[in-house]
Amino acid sequence: MTAADNRISDDALVSAMASGDQDSLARLNQRYGRALAAVADRILHDKADAEEVAADVLWQLWREASRFDRSRGSVGAWIMMTVRSRAIDRLRARKAREPRGTEVAGLSVADDPSNEIHNADRRRKVELALASLNDGERDLLRLAYFSDLSQSEIAERTSIPLGTVKSRMRAGLIRLRDALRGSVE
Amino acid sequence: MSAMEHAEIKDLIPLKALSRLDADERRAVDEHLASGCDECERELESFNEALAAMAIVEAGADGPSDPIWSLLQTRLDASRPAQRIEDRSKRGSSRGRGLAMLGTAAVAAVVAIAVSYAFFNSRMRTDTSETSNEIAALTAKLIEIERNLDATGDQLAALQAKVAQTTDLTLASLGPDARVARLAGLDPAPSANGTVAINHSQGTAMLEVNGLPPTPDDKEYEVWWIGAKQGPLRAGTFVPSSHGATIVSLDLPPQGEVVLASAITLEPRGGVEKPSGAMYLKGDFPRH
Image 1 (cartoon, rainbow over the protein chains, first blue to last red):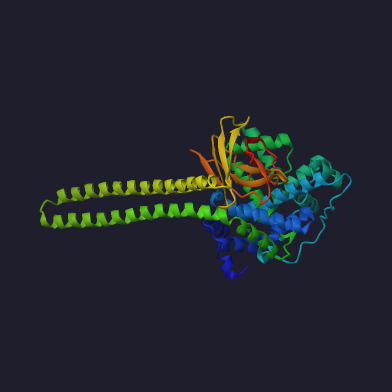
Image 2: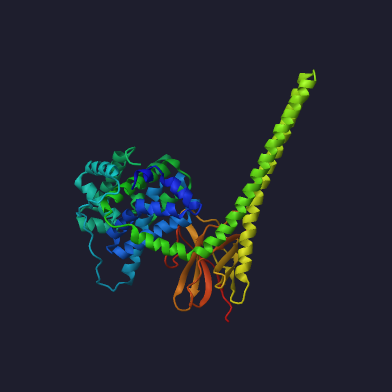
């Protein structure tokens, strides 16, 4: 991302997209495309599928730019939420098509995050916020976000009682939100 | 809803953001949010922001964005006919805005002349209070005219956009290869009706629909082509107009596919790959 690009807010890009400005879509893709594909890939474990899901999300934003409701959250939050939801939908559809016994590649919650960063400052702040969580909370948040496991399945996989799973997820997310509050745009 | 219930719901919001609620909890939270609880809505937004920040960092972003842009470029190219239609209605809107601006400029000039005239008169007269009243009355009248002109300009722009859309719908319905299906309302909206038209030679597909209920925030209607070979194919998504008919330009079905029917279902916002929600309208294309 260039310094000049930094000066243009996501909101301004979406407004320009509403007027049919393809350059703004390209800029938004430069800004979020890789992250979208990375989140989808983390869920789907399929690069081509993940890129398609990322494109689906940006395409949806392109088509609905004029109706984007800024009062319901930031552009970044919307596209990350949407990519996760679409990736999980695709994962479910894939599971439904697969014959019984075929396992989707397992989730590795211990994967090291990539060294390639979307935004160095943002990354540093988020890592600091994640560090404020205890290990159990952090792992459960990752598992809940990057998988399609139900709460019971998470409890089974982690050998933690269901009630504890719920309370740790909740506490972890509140702690993360509070640690990030005001520090990440 | 009592304060206790609100507190209970608020406790569930983090799990809502993680999509980890069971069906009953999800229904209760969705109803609570739909009832307009700003506090819980803000809570949900804040958790979504935090999760988005975590996801960007945790997932990493080590690949190029070019492959995604290639996919987007293909879709942009494929949507060019639809874009052309939208552009035409936009030109209509800008013509309307142009007229409104012209009107505003004209009124501003008239105001200036009138005020100058009144000011000139005031120099000639000795009764300054009478002149002040005249200026005030003139100015009030001209402001009213300006307001009316602005409103007329907006109405004109909306009308021009509607005419452009209606023209596109008519064009899509005409021509030797045009195919038109009448859509009839089903159980969820029995009084709804619509028309869908495909015109490959013009690169146009349009839908006009009436009588559909408004969609919840997280849903929209999705239009489908029912192909003989490929089954349901996505044609487009829309939110119905709050007044009057809704006219939407659609993606054309693929060349070579025989479209037997068209249907409209209610789906998650942004649409889905295959129909999953309730069907609101359906109609068959006449056989050749």
